[in-house]
Length: 153
Image (cartoon, rainbow, N blue to C red):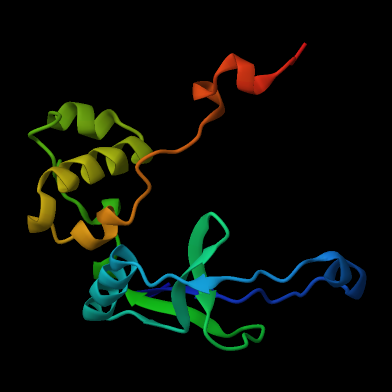
């Protein structure tokens, strides 16, 4: 991917029958403070994109600001604006875990630890605008009440 990461529009489009059954995604631009702070932070980091923060009912995401053709670049941003674990030479959160635990941990645990360490820094973290936009709760089936599951036998 070179010096920047890119997200591309799909190269293949669904056939006519599939398109006829798909509902268009209708979003509303997210004008909330967290979204504004995050996109300002991205802009300062060198973000270049044809998307805006949006909500789709109760879901958050991004939407294109103009029609998108196959092969169009939707987003481009420098690697310095990513949480790139491969760029780390040592454990970045020694206040949470020792180097041996860090090295033995899978990437997703390392990422979680890094996010916890950065969140603890509050507004002093360079990642604060990104972290403030992350959901605080995620509905996982393992946490569902048995009454919500109904009869699963």
